[in-house]
Amino acid sequence: MHNPILLTAICAVVSFFIGAIPFGLILGRVFNHTDIRKAGSGNIGTTNALRVAGPKVAALTLLLDCLKGAICVLIARPLIAGVGYGFPVSLMAPGAPGDWMLGVICLAIVCALIAVGLYAWQSKPVAETGASVTAAEGKSRQEIQDELDAIVRDNMMTISVAPVAQLQKGGKLRVNVQNVQDNKFPQRFRVIQNDETIYESGVVETGKTVETCPAGDIKEGEAYIEIQALDAKTYDAHGNPTRVKVRVAQTED
Image 1 (cartoon, rainbow, N blue to C red):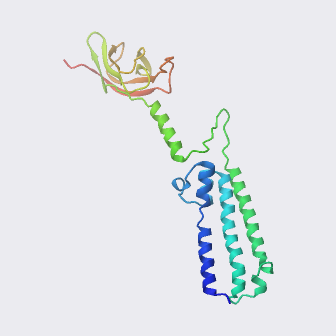
Image 2: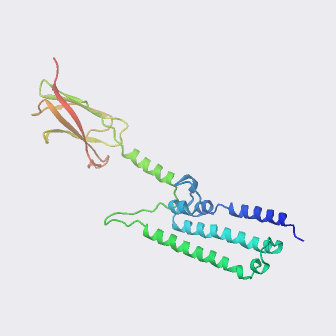
Image 3: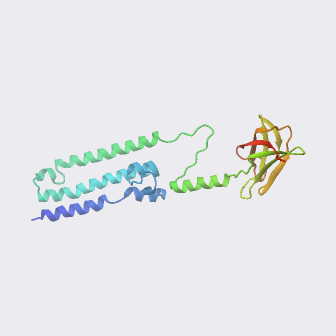
């Protein structure tokens, strides 16, 4: 005669280990080389797999997670049928009318896969006209963020300008525009007042400083120094210029 306590314990232990298989984590590593625990919500279920690793991994995660439950049911049914537990043997034995449960499980899996497919299709980004779309498959969010940070660092430019531009004798304007040594781009700058260009410099290489420039018709008051980064090889404009507001004042004697 079967020991019902032992059989129940066996079912519980086997079901626990089957349910503990982290298919979302495994599939994310296999297909995307990504640890989905370190991105999105941090969960290893279907929704985070979809969010981090895409619809393919999400669909397989959902299917295998559902199969874990189905396998546990298939293991437990004949054991429960043998022990009894008050259930009719005709209902619980394999091949009995109780097999409708497996049909429901399979139908649920199919419906879930269809839902995931529709969600992935509807959430697929549409490229704008003239835009280029690049894939980031096989990269974690951290790797993508590191690449973006590197791009930002490579295009950063430190701007050094005197906040007060001093009018000096001899028609000079002290601006102290410095292209610091750490910058990666040469610069060109303009002195602007009332939307008119008072002075436009030549190329200012990294590590160089322009202390003074011709004052022209500039007056005391508000003005701007507009700095434009340049391509290091062609000296064409690189990116958008940056305007810095300065105050023009007479040099105190």
